[in-house]
Length: 283
Picture 1 (tube, one colour):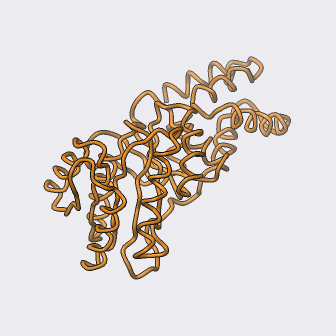
Picture 2 (cartoon, rainbow, N blue to C red):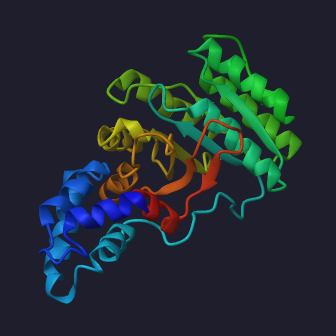
């Protein structure tokens, strides 16, 4: 409440002073909503300014931001009989490998059988890291050697998931710069390879976004979406300095919304996206 009280004071709320629209706009920029989203929200609020009073402006702002986000948490479960294949993609350093382990743990606790694929073969440490998590969690990890063909590994992992009748297969892909076309093409190759076993796979392709990246994550999302068609987001480091508003900007610009929030470094620190809680945290 300290941040909110400070915000209200800066906006002139409860002080008898006129509403400070510039302070509100600055607050939205500080939340990493991006220029396009901020401009859209400010326009909508100004159109309603005669119907608003200073005590309701914060809630009105939350409502406008919330219109870009799903009311209910998106579900990973589907009606298909085979394993639900999830690709985790993103640039380097966003926390994909840790997110893969957290997601596997979350699904296992929901009663599902899970198989992990260490498809980040560009980084030996990623294979070791995911293997260590798998041992701790009692979840099998399909892996190969450093430099192995990631597409072939994901193909083999799906073949195994089909044999075992696993509920979920989570593929931890290598971090790659969204501006490198050859690396993005390799990601598309992994997708084409798994469709040989299941034409509908992958069923979910989740972009792992670090909140500290800021609005540059929108450009990342556009490039990854063009290469492999994203279905959702995992927003990491929400407990840090980043506000997470970039999730709103991505949702507004390309229609991809958050599935989970990474709220810490622990294995249990992965929370299904909740719009109300997110908006409370954002403002």
